[in-house]
Picture (spheres, helix red, strand yellow):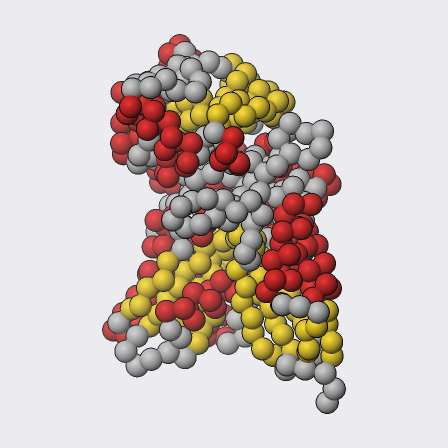
Length: 185
Length: 281
């Protein structure tokens, strides 16, 4: 098996230029969580011209709503949620400096275009492997919207968090190309 | 014939246990399907995904961490023997109390909320309960937590009869194809054909709880299931949609008589994390 690429956040253009679809990547450093309700609030702040609750430049948002942690654990089960629901919001956040997204499932044309335009990346994590993924999360703290419960924004400290590059800065899509290779109809 | 009494406390206790077990302990049929998938795939990425599924199931069972963070809405099928008398309270309330306790004590995610205000109730109640009266004096409870990555990919359509069996097959394959990576493939495709709008959806949902590899007892329907499975596995979607030969683990079809004017078809998609546990009281 090919070696995984190890990267550390925040993401720089230099890192993004190295990433191609199908690359297996291990992420270490800080990532932020956010899903449906948190995205709605973040974009409302942008539209009002107000400050975001964290500095988004060069950061990665992970689309996840974890289960409550068991005693002694940093986080509970923490696999990705389906990403298309964040499509209306993602380009606005990329314009503000967001460089990476982790989720599962296809992105819309608007997101793929924005990934090219603003130089960003969309990573796929393994859906339905939340227990396994939880092992890569060393620390978690809520930084905004605690009232949203599982949907609150959390700052995660991760070590070797396993993902695959699905959409790269060249506008390519692993879901399209992977399926094409195995299609027998 | 005498009537057998079952207390609501026993029902609550059982539902609590089934909620916790179903979210951390996959059935042997699913584990076997993962192992077979690992053998079938030739791409390193697809193989790697199956290895992750197997490792995930092991960690979940050993450490009691939910298999998936989407611990679903608690779908509960009740087969209630007509000679059973439920005592000590309200059956629906007893089930909800079991869900409340199971989700809290099992560190499972509360996902249920008001559909319009989006305010989370915090305890994953109410359960989605389907009660069926059956002969006998037993009570069978099946808990099937349903995640919404796959639920959102499900559809009900009422076709004109002219569409025929071929049209129905084409629709089912197309639904899986269009869902692509979103429902966490390989999927289990639950199909309900016939009945009314809601009957088709209900039998499709129940079809998902059938063990993998078990065919519909009607040989014609069984043949249709296998034909669809073969076609779906030619789509190329593969595990997590990254490309591969295993897009579905199985297709389960249930049918019911319908009206001269229609062919209702419900396609209920289940992710690879095919969770359900049952108990008979």
